Length: 243
Image (spheres, rainbow, N blue to C red):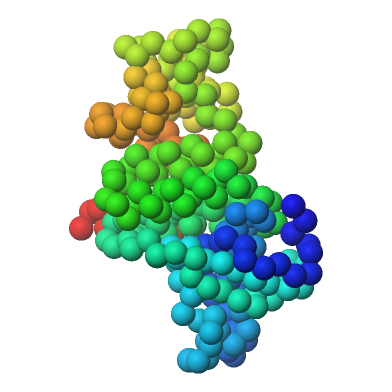
């Protein structure tokens, strides 16, 4: 799909983030279904009577229209395309965490239709009160897959043997799960149960130890792709949980 076309109408999208631009406008970072992450200028959106202003909120399915070429297009229309996902408390912070992951790990104008559906599904599950840990781990795995890093969860990479639930493995981010003996002193490994990895492959995070170990593993993998940059929402989530 050519994201450089000069005009586009009725594109499914969500707002990831907005920030001020000049006196009355804002820059909108949007995640669109067919065009991926987009940078859009919403001219006059800070004015009280702006038609764009009411729609530019997080977690609201939108139909967008824009014009222009280049890295920043001009947003010409933004309308609701369904009920907003009402997120509060920890679920809301998880929603912002998902937004920040998309912002920092996806390049602009790089389509990811499958991930867009995963993103929309994650918001829907967060609004319905499902387990936030399971939702975040599933989305993190989907996001890494989309940027070309498939997380191996079923086979030991040195010999290709199926993982054994009762065994412990050392997950090497650059390669995948190794037996603890094979891993030796490889730097940056995360030690965890075979059961945890197999549970992750099934999307089953009901076991508390699986939830804890998978969180540790995904934090390491996500951190590697962020070049260890700190996520603002992760820090806020930790502070909220401590309270």
